[in-house]
Length: 240
Image 1 (cartoon, rainbow, N blue to C red):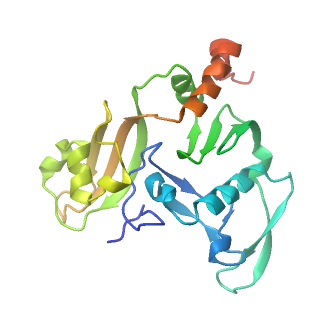
Image 2 (image 1 turned 30 degrees about the horizontal axis):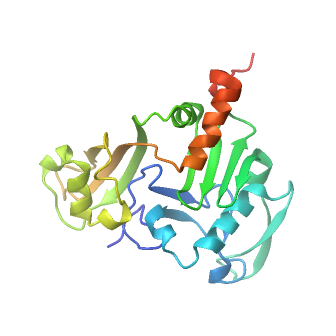
């Protein structure tokens, strides 16, 4: 079964739910040394799959390296067309400043806009704008939008699927093991938009709204930021 947004590990659909899945390698290359010299990883993953992945530790090391390399640093990548190694300059590392580090957790502040990227081996990775960071600091469990994710079902679904619960969606796609706890999480809601309702009824756009649930060490950092700086810590200041 193939999907436009399939997980790189299990090859099943991802639903674009912050805190449950995420994308890597789109802005800066993330090396995949377990695949060979100069190979990279790019695409989406279920965080549940990452937790049991044999390459988890190496992957998080390379993901952190993509954000924390020295300004102007380079990396050697294998050209898919020629098979030769080429030298590429890292860009992302110049945009981020590490603001919190502890074993298994790295939080970076983006220097050009007010946002943070969290890399946590117990969670996965997530980019937070000021509103989401403020929610976490206040332990606000209200659902947030996850964005639209393209999914193609392997069989027709009824138009009534537009009213499905998240549990019905997970059951239909056999995704329960890849989103542990999502069904039981209060406040989760699903929107389905049929791409071609008069045709196969298989291609849809899915948007899942769910609370941002993060490890306590992540919440503790943002709660400390709120205590130290108040609401201004998450206020966006527009240029004059």
